[in-house]
Image (cartoon, rainbow, N blue to C red):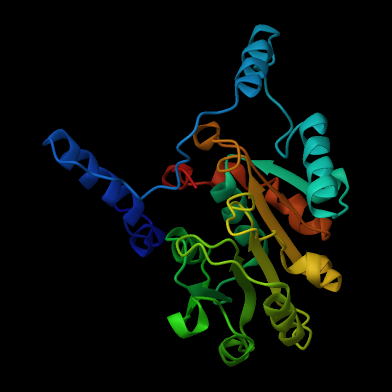
Length: 276
């Protein structure tokens, strides 16, 4: 069987490869601390588990709207308002099978063949592969220890071309754990003001994994004018230890992006259902 060309563009997830190797070493009796997957070391809170059990008993196991039930969307809206001070409507929110699914759907909705997506490195392993699957071109920008592994406004400006369609921001970062400060985000927003067609995808999945008294903010929090062209990605995997539940959500003021995300689930490759 001859497979599609896009299949040759992706590679095995390094995360899964390391997990498999670590599992093999454990079976051999070796003492291994596994730092591959972003798997919380605590359990899903009991009240969440009980609510899920009750929902099953109540027969809530049927088809739902592709973008999420109104009740679930309202919970997401309430989360953004309460925790982030951001306001969205139900038609600006989409719920998908995990944060990875949300990102893939967003890229499918915004990318055309040859569009470039800026990805600061170090980065979460799946960003480039998803861009390639959507016929885009990953533009990797190396952020050094001198940069504190964060994208600087100078490097952002240098990476932008007429083909640039989107920029990934991930704070707190996977894998470095680094957090962008208000001033750092403002500096990036200042560059982006000169390029109004560039969409920001802010991956906030580690929002609640913070240390040293740091407080979470994304680029929309510090530069509200960016909300109109920012796609916020989040979910319940990390904060609530629900990685296997596959619940991610995205929000964007541009309802066209959200509407098109609702059309994408059938296109999601099984490979991308791996934990975010």
